[in-house]
Length: 532
Image (cartoon, rainbow, N blue to C red; front, side, top):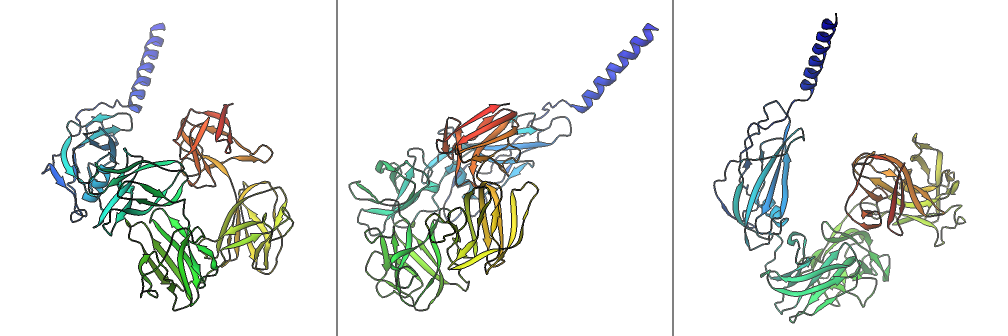
């Protein structure tokens, strides 16, 4: 009887082990991937061949002895400095690029235009993310880079972070007159940015170094023949004149797009005159028309006394380009869209129902497209209305809140209407569409976001605000991963780095799994995480 029991137990253990083996197959590389060699080993990139196909990067599939999901990481290395960049992660066995795209990738590993470098392409295969096996060979080649943004006249780079700088994102100063003076504009997206000025035709020639932009913003920069640098204060551009709503006293402000590097405004103009001016001040930079071309809808900008003359009263989309290496231009496109006001006031119980006071919140319509938004703090049971040019705008019917009371929507009544009441204290993003007569209240503020948080990198977890301490806190369960702090659901303002010294655009913070109380002090740029 004991023998029968022993054999039964032994068979059960063997069966259990076999089941475990079936569930967890062993990932063992049988044959590594292998690259197909290029048909050529020396490349020269330029404007003419930038759109042409770079040789397709191909390799054989890795063999792990079992049917497995295999992904491949393909990496480019600059042999001169050992810097690397990921070309792509794919489940296929090839990658395609144009010459221009490869030129950009090479810039990311410290390669510069007009110079020849040796590069190496390598690959790592991963089965179920459980392995990391290199290919059996690599691809090596030489390439000479070019700058697609280079101009036909003498120019220089604003090299941010020199000597480790990226020419593909560098602003250009120009010397179109050939007098040895380089001038132009550059935008700096953070305080205390350091830069150098590098000759565009000879990257080994430094025209000026150890320059600093103390505050973030859009600057005018000039470098004379002796290397002396003149730098303006941060500039905000606008249009000014009797053709504009602000007359000759107040600029109608333009908006800068760091992606297109253009200043733009949509505004109504009268059949009168205007100029481009910075910082609402005639002592600052300003530009007018070329003599004899004052009424043209596009053309060159010059520093001079000639005003632009508007021949037809209409709304216009006005665009100004100040980043073309010392040659500046503008365009005016007539538009048929109706323009809204630039802002609406939100008078309410929090400030005495006076729309004219400075403490009255205001929602903005930057595009003047009748869609307004703004983020504000409201105490519990605050009441308010919208107010636009003397017209009170309330709501019709109740606010419809979601289950979590984070988002509320309601209908607007353009002639008075009921007061809008916020029952729970907090920061809210107020939105209104005056064409559709709808509005919304979205609870917002500082949030945590990242693959360690419940919403991943796609959705932040909003923190709770204490107006007495001005601290933000949240109790949350995290998984092992990374996170950051972000304001108002956008990356414009975000904090990372270390909890004791958070910085704008700082690195992601690694966290271990657990339930935490997280407290953020955005003024001091510090935070604490207490495991519960």
